[in-house]
Image (cartoon, rainbow, N blue to C red; front, side, top):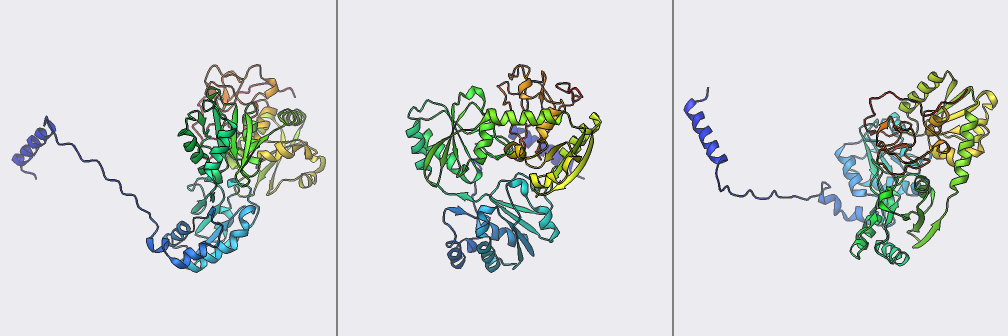
Length: 453
């Protein structure tokens, strides 16, 4: 037991210290910046010589990967690369096999990898791998949700940010003009570097949009940020070597003029998109599907494209409407495979990649809807042609639908996109596949429009 006198003395001292009128200022905490990667690994001359054989502009994060392999004592590891990087899979395997201290076995997963949604953790886990290294995409599937530890390597591509900034400066000589900057994950660092260069030259209205959980400036083929109307942005500079991801941004922001900067050629190109043609085709598919009595539900099995959570929601809608349905598992959806079902299915909804329907939907004999379009078809969300107003006045949400049923996906009070590109956005509609979804409203879901049967 403590001595009461000692305890009293301690309390008195503590009180005296706390009431000291002139306390000594506490020293600022020291910051220690260090690399977790061992110096011996970073300075290994043989390893660095092997790395030098790879393209110098591509950051494959070899040292980090080797350290992760060793730290996890991996006995087996799998490498997954998209088609554009698959040519580097064998050199990477050779380097890791030679310099990994634990000498693990390596597998190359060469199935099509279109995006981070194609994460092949199921295949890697079935091979008893201890680590999966996924190249070329950001962390769309949280590491806490994967079946084994996953290391994401973005493969940042070093480009001349100064040249990008100079091109923007020549195209937009007035620094007071609001501009948006975005790109694919490989070039996001160049986007931010160019923004910094331009800000030093007086360009203080450059907006780098973000659709969480993606990085600021990052755009996916199915998920793109909507630039707030308050930013007064008329043009976007999109850094990419193709236009697939840019098209998602254009769909989400149809009134913004889109320029694509090719980082390899160093040229700026004004891109166009047939918004009216796309929306007409999708409207026709939705209206045709409203006549269907028998539905097919495609759950994509390519990586993590298919979401069981979204499947459950689709099934709930089917039951509510009393529709007949069949669930079909398919790794890659094509008109040829869908046509094998002939007329036994009158309409389809696919839980895989929305761009399959948007880009190639007209190639299918039967309507092939996205999950957003499915909600429109069944009347849970108003179609863009059914909206009287697309301005949200109430700022109140009901399961991804504004209180007045006129817009989707957010409560910012701005003008809403007619066709949302929010498939993995945190604040997207209930139809999306986001793993880190914001808490849904407690109110009961209601249909935005009644559909006559």
